[in-house]
Image 1 (tube, helix red, strand yellow):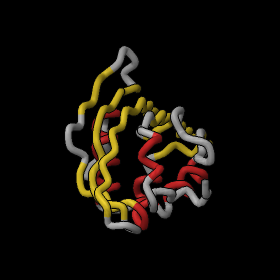
Image 2: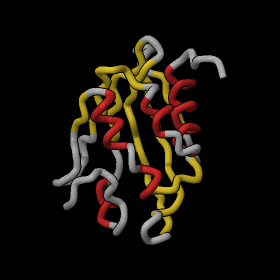
Image 3: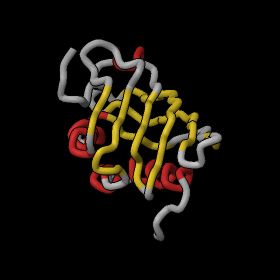
Length: 141
């Protein structure tokens, strides 16, 4: 595949990598000093990850806990800043530990510079982490 040329194309590519459980390639889409933020994260969950290494550590075990199957209803909105998009989507699959359904709604604000994600503010539903088996961060509540 040729390198994605727009933030929307890069984001779509990142979702394919998550579905393929290719976390190293997904992390490779990030700028070295990229920042991932979770403004709605509950106590005990990270609110801000600074740098590609921190993001890699956070995501490393994701496929062991969440088996993603699809991102239905993906909507990508352009903003007045051509490097920033707003994404609405659902992630569906199953929680590996319990084999229960996983269905999360997300809104994300994503900024891309020079072909890499530099900022990702993920407004996910914190109530979903009350389900057993969801905590893949290494931290325990």
